[in-house]
Amino acid sequence: MPNPPDSEPFADTSHDPPVRGFLHRPTKSNHNGLVFTHGAGGNAKAGLPLALAEAFAGAGFVVLRCDLPFRQSRAFGPPRPGDAARDRQGLKNAVAVMRKLVTGRVFLGGQSYGGRQATMLCAEEPGLADGLLLTSYPLHPPGKPERLRVEHFPKLSVPALFVSGTRDPFGSIEEITHALKLIPAKTQLMVADGVGHDLGFSGKKKSAALPAKIAEVFLGFFK
Image (tube, rainbow, N blue to C red; front, side, top):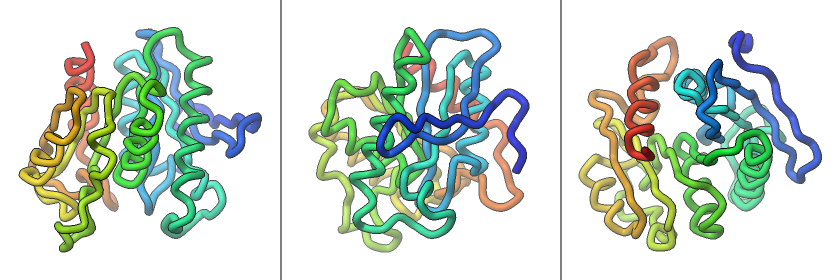
């Protein structure tokens, strides 16, 4: 997949793990930055991170869509149980990089697994980011609602916008709504009607209007 004309490959190897991905610079900056990463089966070139990066850059953000360390090590396959801590360190390093690129606020987020690691990182280090963007948070494995991934939610003190599809098997809208009550910080749930865990970005199907709407809601939430 070729790079969009408004993005450029990015690498900072001064960190361990290094920060790699693609940087989007807005035509007119609002001085804020967004670090956004992918899910367990994807990478920084996946359709949803790319579309969101373009939408947020269009809204004035400097955006870094980055590959998690596990994906930098392996082109295919899901993360392994021992990868999570290093993936979180990779996100921490990416936030540090973004802090050098913008003078305003820095937001962190990700799709599914990437978003989960972002929430765990911010629960561990409350002052790291100024806010979270979490698309398709994997609340529980499909068909196993008893295995909730919310142990760290009571430690989240950073505002967070969640985006979930009404057909997501990793958590119903009702389940997500209930889980967000565990978070002491300000939260909002944006519901995407008629889409599943991929938010309409699997295969050739694309929900062109959704990324722009997410950016609009995000700007309102963090105004």
